Image (cartoon, rainbow, N blue to C red; front, side, top):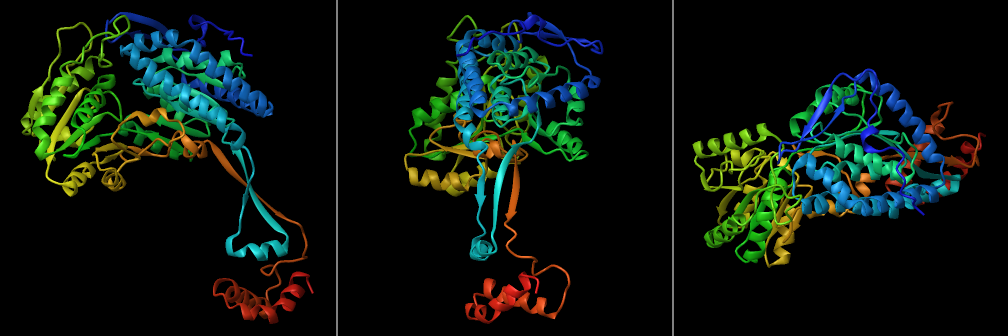
Length: 538
C-alpha cells in the first residue's frame, strides 16, 4: 500500500545551499500577486547534485523490479489523490484555467505514469537478435546475440512553463521507469511546479535523490546543467534555445532530445463537419492562451466553405471567457506568462497588418488586470508574411483559403516547423492519404492536439521543431542503451579472418561470399571440408 507520507513540506523542500546567489520571486500572471519566493541554485551546486543522483540511480536499480513498479503505482496514486492541490500550484504560477490544469497537465501526467508501469517489465527483458541470411551459419558455429537494455544514467530535463507539471512529470516518470535518475530544471516562471514533481516522487517512496530539482535562470543554471556530466538531456522550449543547447551539449557529446516550437496547420475540407471543425479550431487556437507548441496556428479552409467557417469560428471564439479561472470554472482562457509576451502579441498583430493581413477580431488587450490578450484571428495574410511563417506563442491564429487538396498540402507544408497538424474531412480515406503527405511528427484526422495525453504514442517533430521522441516505445528507446552481448560457444579454434593470412583464406572468403550473398549454393559442398579444417586450426 502507498502511505502517501511526504518527507518534506513544500516551504522547506528546496535546498538552499550557501552558494545560492539570489532569490526568485514568482508572480501570478493573472492577478499579479506574489506566489512565493525561493533561492536560485548556483552552477557550483551541480557536481554534488549529479553525484547524489548517480548513487540514487544505482540504489533504484538494485531494487527488485516488482518493488520499483509498486512505487511507480504509488506515484500514480499520489497525483490522482492530490489533483486539487497540484492544480492550485499550476494555476497560481501560470494563471491558466483550472480545467486546463487538470486536463492538459495532470491527466497527461497520470496517463504517462500508468503507461510506464505497464511497460516496465518488458523494458528490461533481453531481446534476441537474429542474423538474417547468416542465421544457419551462425547456428552451426554456435553463436548468438541479444540486447540487454540498460538505463542511460542521469537524465537532465529542462522544462517549459506552459505545461509546468504535465511535461516534466511525464518525462521524469518515463526516465525513472527506465531506471534512470533525473535532475529537473523547471522554468524560472514555474519553479514551484517543479518542486511539486519531486515532492510526488518522494511521496511515492523512491530514493530521496533519484529526482532532484535545480532552480535558476536558463542563462546560468540551465547552461551549467547542459554542460555538466549528465548522460542525456531532454529540452522542451524554443527553437533558438534548443540550438544553443545542442551546440553546448556537443562539447561533451551528450545526446539530446529536443521538443521545440511549432506552427501547426489545420486543413478544413469542404466535406468536413464544419461545426465540429470550428469548435475544435477555437479550442486548438486558444487553449492555454495559445501558449502551446501544438496550438492551431494556421487554418486553411477550402474556398467554397470559407465564409461559413469564418462565421462559426468567430462566433465560438467570441464566446471564450477571459480571466483567472481558479475560482470561476467558466473561464476559458487565461493570461500570457508575462508583460513582454503581451507586447510581443501587439507587435505581431501590427506587423501582420503591415504585411497585408486583416484583423477579423481581437488584436488588443482587454480591460483586465494581469497579462491578458484577446483571442485574435488574422485573415488575408500572405503565405509569406511573418504571422504565417513564424511561430506565434499566443492567442493569434491565421485563416486562409485554398482551392484543392494539392494546394492545401503545399500551404500546410510551407513551414520550417514540423511538429503536428490536422486535416478535417468526412472522407476518411482521403484524410489518411493527406495526413501521410503532411509534414509533422503527428498528424490527426478529424481531431487535433490531444495525443500528447496518449502516452503510448510518440511525441516530437522535425526541422525547427526538433528531433527525438518522448512517450511511447520511441521515447523509452532514448532513455535506454541497447547493450549488445554476443556469445560464442567456442566450438572452433579460429576464425576465417584471423592470422595468418594466406591464399586459402582468401579463396574461402570468396567462396563464402558467393554462397551467402550470390546464392551459389552448389559451391558449398566442395568448400565444407576446407571450412572445417580452417576453423579447427588445421
